[in-house]
Image (cartoon, rainbow, N blue to C red; front, side, top):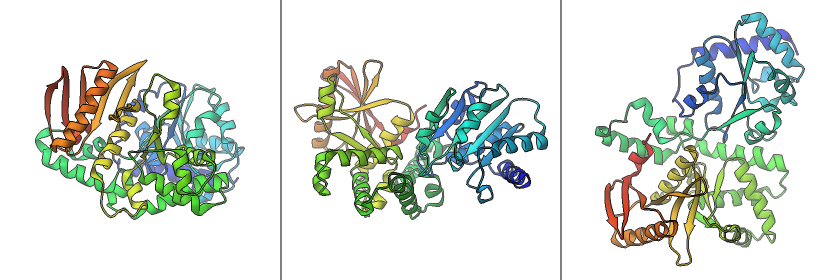
Length: 418
């Protein structure tokens, strides 16, 4: 490929990064910064449009000196081959004459076939460190790390957390409760996809869904019945916070094979569109037998594609809590016993459950409170835990019931916990 074009592209992209205003800070940035001096490559994974490219640019800008950034979706790089990486490297060395370690940022790297061969070879040198991301029909970001023969560290990136959107406005002081709740209302209305939230434009969600379904799944796996898969995806997304089974989904969509449904749900999970949650049990047979609950990468996306005119606030809060637990790296389950008592989230640490979380929007309703607390107390007894947490809309209290301590905390306060 033409050397002049390659040089022009990376020089222009570098200038744009250096001139760009720092966007919304992401919580994983400090965690990534801790790994800068290690040899391992950094892989950033996540759903389309969650901000991977912006994060990569922010990290590159923070290096200030010796970095090479290339976004391979630039149309001028059409036809870039694996052998052209050597030209890219030579031109970079000629242009900037780096003296120390060079941080190499490869964005949308899946556009170059066999890119991993060059990265694996160059990764052996102590003088370079790679940051890599990419996600489309040819290569989901979840697969990048498996192509790298050297050691790598993967950081999952989700759409904005509530803490991230509050950060620019300095809303951590609890005296600013009114502003915090206004931010939470906006967050629940628009979700966490960066462009959707910042521009208050839910119409963008249709394009995101279309690209994920068509480009990342249907084209990739050559699914023949496109209409069926589209409808299945919308339906499953709309079920967030509820249990699903392969057989029942098969009945709804007149698909005789549960394995086909299982495979389709696997595709949705690989593309980070949904997550499934197992029932907690010490018996693997019980885990397999019980239905899984499904959660969406973004409840607003799910409701938008299901054409829901009204929000199920309780379900949205539950989905937000689930995603926050995923961001915090927790091992999560739900719990349901033979008496039909159910707890939304069981947090496992090591070999056993450590925390129980119940999500209840309207805890002041006596019947609702009785049902939710009875389930929580049942799980506390079952797992020999002394306390349980109930996340509410705006109710805050602590009470001792049947020898166990129940703590109620508002959603906004829990989301802003350090």
